[in-house]
Length: 213
Image (cartoon, rainbow, N blue to C red; front, side, top):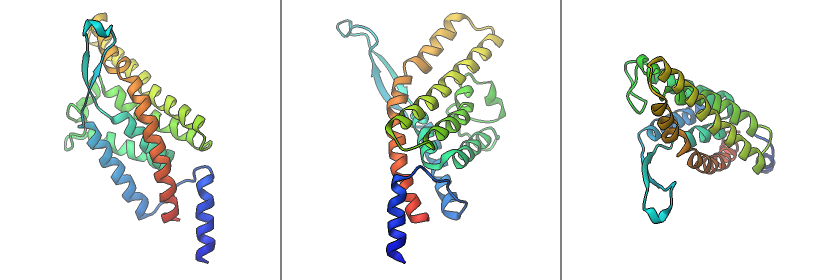
């Protein structure tokens, strides 16, 4: 009986992802992912970025917040249903006056912040990435999932920011600088780190299936 279960568990390593069933273990993993998302919000990695000639010595230093890779990790680990639940809980708690889960605080008024569009876009990112990952475990599926997930965050975030800036009558220079520093200078890092995060999530998910089945 044990050998049969072991063989079935090993075979599942080579099959497309299954849906995670409701159980205490799944709830615990969701809570861990939620905590990981909160921690990533307040984690800053200093990165030197040089868009110009190195001989000119012109470097741009910015603080990279690894939230996007964590969102893709959640999509790869929890799948669409549980991953979406995790993101929704994070956003709902962050919009309450009792939890300051976002980088600049929290509360319902946070929807008027320029960067809230990026947070709101986590919903689309998890859905799109999870659907692509459910198609199979190939490297191509992972690459497309990361591209869909990362690009959806930046596209929705930029559109949201532009609308907010236009409402506040901010100039085009402000909008251009915001897009550059918040998206253009960081999107490549998001893609690279998110790919690594999804690969880790896929491996963790297979182990999770084995012990929760």
